[in-house]
Image 1 (tube, rainbow, N blue to C red):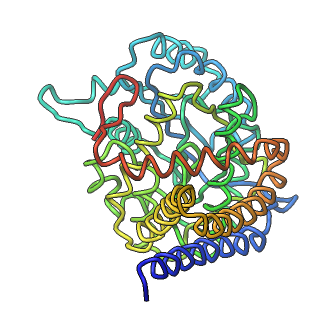
Image 2: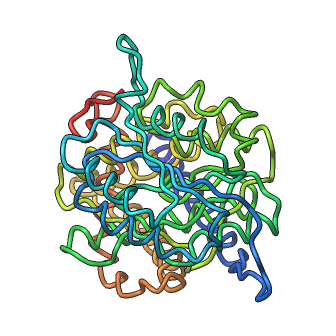
Length: 386
């Protein structure tokens, strides 16, 4: 077999592998039924909402408003917010919200909880851990200070938690489908991640989740040692904890496929912000303990690299253009079907008008991230992370 024939064989096998992954995702998404709590459902789970906030003065008022608008029974829930060394008016706005007495709100200053010589790598995990240790809820629910929360958010989480008797609930997180062209492309890209998360959890494969909408049983958190063992990376308070709980309690992680439980956040308005965000997300992948996850990520990266390389080779050797066209056609078709299904269900179908530029954007940035992530340290709100 010639080197060219071997290359073509590898490229076609990589394409088949990618197609198999997305057929798996499609099957999982299509067969995961939407969750609707019984009309007679009355929650009885005590919930502690836990939030780490750093320099979020722009979003604190709307977050407090959304928390105030929750329909969860009074006396069954509380809110713990940790101010992580904010340099703006975040702490003052939170204190004003607490003083109003309209929310069961507890505030913690992370700076006051740290020992003078204590070295912290993962500030967000430290903040969440501090609040969790004090929280009294059976179910811990995390979100971010810049998110918008729907009125039935907590009640829908509690309904699935009680009905399934699970140890973790991953809820949907969506970007607001507004803003610039660049931000809307991110919204479409991010919707795809939610579909993959839901599809994999349909088959009890806990590959990813998002801490902006995540709930877990406090006893399960304690049983796996909380965030212990994941402090070496600033990111991963969500996925690395999920992997620990899924490993200790197989089959007890669920995805909440319910529109009323979706949390909305904001896409990055700048290229720099986007790049730093995706670098942080990529950085935690080297700490995954389940070999199948980095294996799947690696296979996708190889396919993307081969697709781009084959297209470049086709500029000098026309026969490679046909191979590149086949690879691109397979990816275009399966990606379109999957994203159409997900955005249609989440009522963000208008984002599909950006499918082609978003498709190319995703292909290029994933390839660049996979190549450069090992050499660049990301930053987050003025801090360099590891």
